[in-house]
Length: 250
Image (cartoon, rainbow, N blue to C red):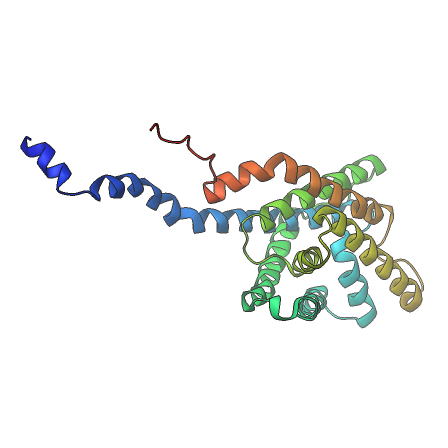
């Protein structure tokens, strides 16, 4: 046995350590990739909300209820949104009970970050409302696609979801319904409640128009579509999911 063979045989764990070494780097940067994906999702979600407002066909379903409540209470929409999101977190605690993890409270911080992104996208798109119905409808359709895709980016990393999505995930855990079906019901319910409150307390429909109802139906569909289209590849990117290697020859 030469010296080289003796050195290798005298360190039985060396080969295993060397084989495991490359895996340390994906683990080191995995949190960065997940955080970047999450932040990008929140930014695209804010952009989708901004486009729905700019379309002037009604705000997005997730924003319809805080928009109407802010008009009724005559308070800033950002404050009303934060309070409503806090209620959504409380609803999760009631629904999940002991299954609710304390890290779920990070959803409140996510809501604050989302509000900052909304302010940013509103400043970027400070233009006049399109003067043709076709362009307004196009803005609304693009908004629905962006919001649906953004939900995939926000939910896949497994970090703190937005409080509305956190509530939907809690319902999914308890009912086992598909997430995009829950999303459709949640959005339609929010729009219906916003319309009812608007008519009762304001005497007119505010922020709720045909585009809001259209978005309520389309966002859930877009979510399901992008989950199937991008979900597997995105999970491989974020979590280094790979096919199992073939068995070693005997």
